[in-house]
Image (cartoon, rainbow, N blue to C red; front, side, top):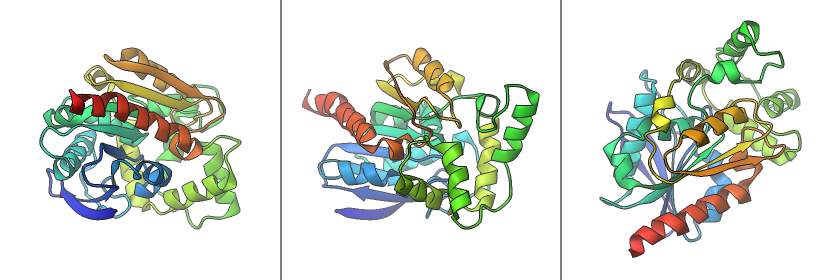
Length: 289
């Protein structure tokens, strides 16, 4: 069963939300990353909605959520709180998974009362808390001012991405996916990323380039697992290692050999399985206590 609804954020932004799966089943909330949409989680929605209530939403400006001139980590946290309020009963617990900017959304919300009310456990996929531009390896140069400058201009470009061509897919695969990624995975990610409006892509690139959520990592007090691909150029493993080391209730770090930034697409069974384990261990346990 699938239904759609609209959640309204603190500033009035209307968020597109999808709820998949049976009513009353354990809840999972999915927050996608920069330039993506609910379509990014297609494998997890398909796998988990058989026996979970899977809640996915489009970040502001992405997918079917309206664009807002307010782009900030506080706005991301407001949006997640609005989705939790619109889809979960008071006190109901859920596993919350965030990929890339979705993981940053979780970190930004970590101090919020509503987040703490509803979060039973968290999965952070391919994300970072700070120094995103400095530590990105999308530009194949040595670390330094030139690489940082070029990376900021590449990721912050206002140029349209254009149609999904063979060349465009090669560029996207290099920047965001592992060398062994299957063609259908590359095609899917390219279509999702190219659908993001360029003004939205640029606006959020400015937020991400100045990101500083290191303190928020220490506020994420629920059990939290971290996943990263060893070949992630957007948020290299140094970010995941730093986050995993600082988490108050960390469940460890899984580094996936050869995978890139799009781990939920590149390793769908593993990511779905990790979410399922978190639900069984933390959500159902709490409900049965």
